[in-house]
Length: 112
Length: 114
Image (tube, rainbow over all chains, first blue to last red; front, side):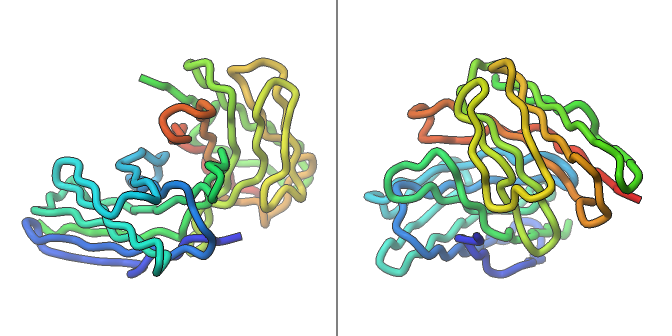
């Protein structure tokens, strides 16, 4: 089942601008993770936010979580060409289920 | 660093063939996963294994089976490949209760069934 839905499906911005991607999910969660996938490759973990956290930072990444709205956003500041990739959110379920449910992804293109 | 490897990056098979996709991880992870990824559908879980010889069906197990005889190796088997199994297949592993269930992915196998 598709728990997460990312929005927008595709996003193109100029290098140096900020990129914001959103994720909505349907059931209660223990934590939410964001992954990046470069074209034709495997996914790489970026950042995790727990259900009792509202915001988290890691380098140029900022993640927010609103459990009342069942939504999260990923902000990439000062984008670079190397940020061009697909970004996926993943949720684990209320009891820290070891299985993750991935969204459909946002395709981000950074224009040099 | 965790390393997850998959036996092939690209694979072309014919309808009806039996296909084996192999995945190996080198970090002693208990959990291993097989996903398929299709445009617009994201990642869908095919099978999950939480220990040697233990497996659990995911969301789309039909037409697939798995084997886990050793902890580090998890195989996905297409008993009789069909064209609708043309897809990108991703293997992942994780350590239960550690790193908040972060999953580590292999590079993927792009399978084409003709």
